[in-house]
Length: 133
Image: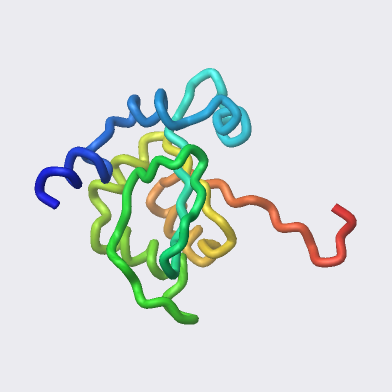
């Protein structure tokens, strides 16, 4: 924990430029960045409720947090609210400067907080049930 984690996992282990150069694909930049000529960190956020192998765009895990108990009140949005409430400074600083946070519908209840913190975010559109698309 004292040797491996600080230099390999977490926001202190990689600069924003290193993250952009090594972990933001051209496709991600085109899809999510309004100015594709000025690449920004694009971070996919998701919670995992039990141990599984879960895919990420390139397999790189930028940061992690402690385990959370999961139920109807402890969902993705509640966990993110807790993270920004208790471990906010480092994450807010890293994300605030033009980073783009990609979240799924599980984070819909925390969107006002992201807006309040000035963190740019994108959430995929939802196709209505029974829609031909």
